[in-house]
Amino acid sequence: MAYPTLASLTTLRLGGPADHVLPISDPAAWPEAVRTVGLRGEAAPVVLGHGSNVIAADAGHPGTVVVMNTRGITTTRVDDSTVAATVQAGHPLADVVQWAAAEHLAGIECLAGIPGTTGAAPVQNAGAYGQQISDTLDRVTVWDWEMGRLRTLPTEACRLRYRDSRFKADPGRWTILTATFHLTRSQPAASIVYQPLADELGVSIGSRPPVPEVTAAVLANRQRRGLLLDRHGPDVRQVGSVFLNPPVTAAQAARWSAVGCPVHTDSDGQLRASAGWLLEHIGCRPGHDVADGVRCSDNRVLTLTAHGDATATGFSEALTQLGERVRSATSVVLRPEPVAIGTWSADQPRL
Image 1 (tube, one colour):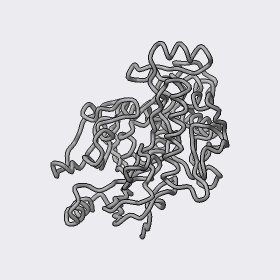
Image 2 (image 1 turned 120 degrees about the vertical axis):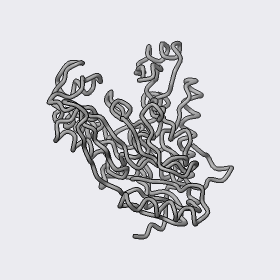
Image 3 (image 1 turned 180 degrees about the vertical axis):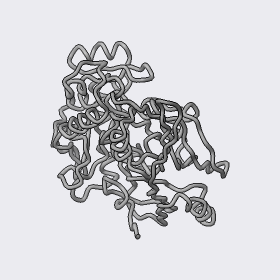
Image 4 (image 1 turned 90 degrees about the vertical axis):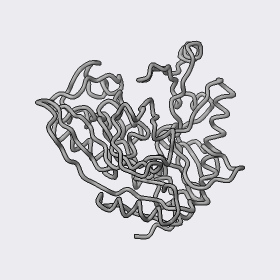
């Protein structure tokens, strides 16, 4: 299978040529992939799953791009109520959540509908509706490119924080090959802690509806809010939320919450303001044109979409300009959520 450009490997459909693309479907093929990268004289490849959280450079990437297509879930019994599910890195996270719901395994039901692969999820410590990967992740198996060997990292060693991890802080050092989750065999789901989800279900905070009901409610809520990747809709070229909810001081939280900005405390105890509200504060609206070929999605301002002849440079510039406008108007600093890959020149905006 040929992949002439990074655009064909990413949901934004942006990005230039890849010098060498290496799809991996069989976990047993990994040693040969490592050998291939070594023979090409590269320290490490760029690794992609579904490319749903990356902005690939217009110039492309001069080295190897590994496309992780491995799939499979194996389970072992930990105790009477806990199941260890080891998932191949290329397995779609959304499919893992649906499998867990069908098996009445609680712990990841609120992650329903999140795009991307299971191997990519710990990098971002993906999360939604009050759950995140760190809640149930027990360990990951990785290839350490610096040490040149397989390693198993327990969750503590992954340094998972709000949308952050050891892997994100040191890109290129590790490639995640499998992730193991400890899930609870239970008819009821984990306690509902996110009010919009409680409203969707018609229950109160702290309730524990059945796992499949929670998964279905999450998908319904994501659909209504434009958070499901519609492969045939007008907003298909996107990477989801383009900014993290920004950290704010207590004074900033008080100031902006007083005028309607939602503020919450994240899992690390940090106060965070709503990035979407801040974008609306500077005049962004659903469907709003931000730059040539770049606009807010039809459903929410926090998702930017690419159209026509959009470029990665133009998309990145749009993020930079929006961030500067928010900082100028509010003194709050927005941090882009997608990761930049490929070769970017010194005068191009870089995330």
